[in-house]
Image (cartoon, rainbow, N blue to C red; front, side, top):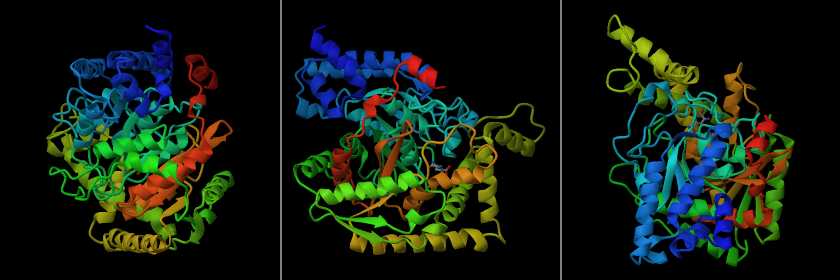
Length: 511
Ligand code: GLN
C-alpha cells in the first residue's frame, strides 16, 4: 500500500462522500479497503458508543467486491456516481434484506427483513457499502435512545450525554466516523434533534419527498426518512439518491428530483444575494430555550447577512400549540399503527397465555418499552369516543393553523431560522421522572412535521464540549432553498466535526 493510500484510509472516517467515491472509482483505494477499514473502526469504537444494533460485514464486503469488479471491468466514475464506495448504515426501523429489523424493540427482536425499504434499496443501488443497522428508541418513541431494548447509544462528544433520539444511532455513527452517511426517520424531530446533539447535519425532507415503503410506521401523516452526514453536500447527495415517487408509497410526491448536490455547488459559487432569510422572533422567546442557543440563531442570521442575504423577522403565532398537537396526533396515529404488533400476526408472543386477551395483554406489556406503552395509551385515549372532539379534532385544527402560519411566513421568506433544540444534549436519566419535560426537546422540530415541510439541523460550534446547532426550514418541496442557505451558512461556520474525541481511551475517560 502506498503512503498516500494509507493516509487516505486513515482519514476515511471523516472524508466527504465525493472524496471517497473519487478515491474508489479512480482505483486509488479499493472498495474492499474502504469496507474493511470501516468495519475495523466499528469494532474498535462501537463498544463504547453502541450506535449499531447489527453490523453486516458480509453485506458490506459483497457490495464492495461487486463495486471493485465493476471498476475493474471499466465502469466510469460518472456511471458509478458520487456515492460509489461510500460507507452507509440504516436506522433499525428500515427493512434491508439480509438483516433484522428490530426497531430496537423486544417486540420485533427476531424480525427478519422480508424485502428492502425503497430508500434503502435506492441508496444500495447508488453503489454504497452497507455497514449495518443502527440503534434507536423503542419503535421510534423517544428523544434519547434510552428506551432502546438493546441499551442506549452514547454521545461520541461526551458519553455522559445522550445522542438524542429516536435516530440516536444514526447520528452517533456519523459523529464518531463509523459511517459517512446514515438514514434516519423523523416523525417529530428524530433526525434533526440527534443531529443537533451530535454535531452532524440532519435533513428531514418534505412529507412525501422520500418513499416510506419498508420503514416501520410510527405516525403515518408525519413520518419521513432522511439522511444524516458530516456535511450539507453529503446529505444533498443522499437525498437525490433516495427521493422521488414510488408506486409502493401512495404518499410519495410526484415532483421532479433536482440534483441537490449541484444546488450546493452553485450556492458556493455565488453569494446569498436575493435570499430572504427570516428569524422567527416569537419562538425565540420560548421558555426553556438556552440563551446560548438563541444567540447561535442570531449569529447565523448575521453570517448569512454578511453573505448578502436579506434578514427579516416573522412570527408563528400558533407555535405554542405545536408540541401538544404533535403529541396528540403522533400518539393517536402510533396507537393505530402499533396495533398490528399483537403477538399473533407480528411481534413478541408471551408464553403460556390462558386465552386470547391474556395473550394480547402480556405480549404487548412484555414487548413494548414503558414510553411506547404510554404513547399507545395516550393515543387510544384521545381517539376514544367522548375524548375525540376535545383532543384529536382540536389538534387537527391546530395543524391547520400552524400550516397557515408557515404559509404566511413563506410569502415573505425563502428560509426560516430557528433553534433545532431548546438545549444542548442532556444527560442520561435527566428526564427519567418527567417524560413530559423530555417531550419539549421536540419543540422546534415537531412544528415542521405538523406542516409537512422541509428542515435541516446544522452544527454551529462547540459549547462546553457539546455541539450547538441551528435549524433551517423551507417550504414544502423547496429543499433547494434549504440546501442553498445551509451550504452558505456551513461555509461561514466551519464546524470542526473531526475534533470529536475518537479514541477508545478518550471516550472512556469522558464517562
Ligand atoms: N422525540 C419524538 C417523539 O418521541 C420524535 C420521535 C420521532 O421523530 N420518531 O415522538
